Structures are given as structure tokens and as C-alpha cells.
Image (cartoon, one colour):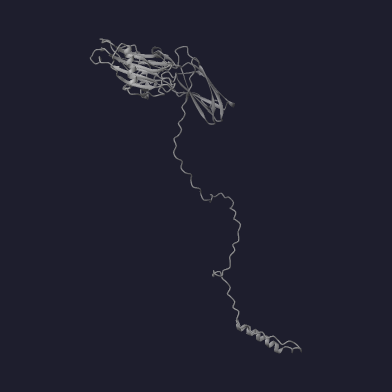
Length: 448
């Protein structure tokens, strides 16, 4: 580069020598001499030299638009699967609601609400030959019903049948299921009419002693029916009995139509036969659409001084001045369902038994007593008793026990079932408590 500048200066000098002569008075020529220090040019920076690199400006670019949707699978990052739900208990299927007519009535009207897709079921018992009318009304007739026999499984009216009513004579004695259904939310009114028969009242709910099969009788619309009257109404076939003990529901057993055995010590007592070998000792069997044991008793100590004194007062009033108090069972329960508890007391002191003769010693006794509050006053009432202030021979004393506390007529109040044992004999009694008054409702038994 230095030689290049010297060459240029030399050319200017030669041009000055060969050019025209200067005019007079002209300034002398200027001679350009090289500078003493050469100009050093810095090399052009490169991107490989970070110390001298030019700043880089990044231009913002428009966000790319997503491609048009295609038939292929999506390319987004898949979402994680939802958490597996915890297992839950499936809701229990609602049981049918039993329709029970008011006392003396033969028709019932039920109004309610049906959600879209919902079904509601009702049960009603009817006897063979009873004329029955079922009618369902709803807005625009959106709801319909089926009418099905529970024992024979026969659909007497299907949902597909467009009629909203059914009329006819019932073919057999059984429960009949009425199933309401709708595809559209609606209010409904169901009318059921079952005309009474001229013969024995129906339905009849029989009550049977499990150990002996004695037919105690039954109930119809809350009213008690004598076992010999009930006998005539139970000849149409076997029945499924619900079996209860003092501890509540035990299970089910099939009972045959009651018969009247004329032979043997218990001839003349209606008896229901259960499966051979089935041990129903201490049980009561009932055919009923209600829960017969809605409340359970609480066992109390037989050493309770209050109850011992109560029994002592009862025995003293019966002529035993200094009784030996032996309580064998004390149970507390709300019999009437009114929130007030009653107490059942069982006491047994029979020293004359076991010697081969049906005798009683002085001071012997067996009793079942009810202790309750009546008009704010505690009262103790004898339900069943054998009390012997003096010794007696061949009196055949009875030993009483509390068998069960059950609702045997469907009024939500509990009856008191007492069993009695004597020399070669047994019987069962059912006591009813209503408004503080106790009465004998049913009884059956026999002895030689």
C-alpha cells in the first residue's frame, strides 16, 4: 500500500514537468508528501470474532397459522386420561310401595311426580274373583302402567297397551304389581279400586307358632281374625312366611294350607305344616307386607331392684307375703311407637316341677308383667300368671316366657307374644296394647 501512494505522487510530479509553463505571478506548486505514519485500516469484523461482532437484530415474524383441518387424527398433545373414579355402592333399587285401603274403603287415590324415564311401583293384594279397576291419568297421557301378578308372573296389562285403565276380575289370590312409567316428566294420579267379596274378608295375613305350627289366627285391615275363620281363607295354596324370633327377622319358610288334625292330643287345633326337619323353635311366622319387627327390645339386668320390687308387690297382692323373687327376663321397648318405653318382666319360681307330677309348692309362681306409664303414673299389669300362695297337687302349673315383640296386624304397634308350657301341653297368646289398655288378641294351643 505504501508503494502505491509513492507511485501516485510520482505521476503527479511528471505531469507538472511536462505541462504548460505557469503564468507569471502564479503560486508555486504544492508538493504532496507522504505522511510519516501510515494509516492502519482495521480488518473487517467477522461473525467469528465475538468481540467485534455486529449486533444482530432479530425481526419479529408473524405467527404461523395452523393448517386447515384434515381427516387425519389430531396432532395436539393428548390430554392425560381422567382419574379413575373411586368405586361407589350402587343405589339400592326402590322397593314397591304397598297400597292399603283405609278401614272400610275399597278404593285409593295416589298422586305424585314422575321424572322423565322414571318408573314407580306399587303393590296391592287381591283375592280371586274381586272386581278391580286401575286408572292412571297424566298430562297428555304421557304416563302409562303395567299390571302384573306377583305369584304367577302374568302380565295382565303391558306398558305397550295404550289404554290407561284396566278392569277385570282378579284370577287368583296374590299380590299385584302396578308399575308406572313415563318418557316425559309429568304429574300423575293413580286410582285403584278392588271391590270386596261377599265371603270371608281378604286379604288375610296369618300368624303361626313356629314350633308347633299352630295357626294363631290372622289380621285383615288391622282387625284380628279367629284361627277357625282364618282357616277357611288359607286353603288356596302354600304361602311364603316371614319368620321372626326374639332377636328379629330369621328368614323365610313355606307353609302349607292349614289343616285340622283330629287325631292326637292337639286334635281340633288348625296347624300349618312347614318343611320336615325345619326347626322353628322360639319363632313366630307371619305372611305380611310390612316389617313385623320395626323396633328391637333392650335387655335389662334381672337384678334391677326397681323391677324386683314391682314383682314383689304383684305377688304380695296375690297372697304371697314373702315371695322369692326370680326374674328370668327384663326387656325395654317402645311398644306403641309414641316415644315412651314400656318394660316387659318375666318371673318364674316353680319348685314343684320336675318331680313327675303337675304340682305346685306354696309360693310358686310364673308370670309375665307389663310396666308402663299411664297418665303420668307408672303401672305394672299382669299379662299371664300362675300364682300359688299355697301348695297344690295336680294343678298343672304353667311356665310362661316372652316369645317375641312384633307388629302382627300392620299398625306399627308391637304385640306381646307369650308362650306357656305345662305338663304335656303348650299354648301361645298374643296381647295387644292400645292407649294404655291391654287385651288378648289371639291365642292357640292344646294339652292332654
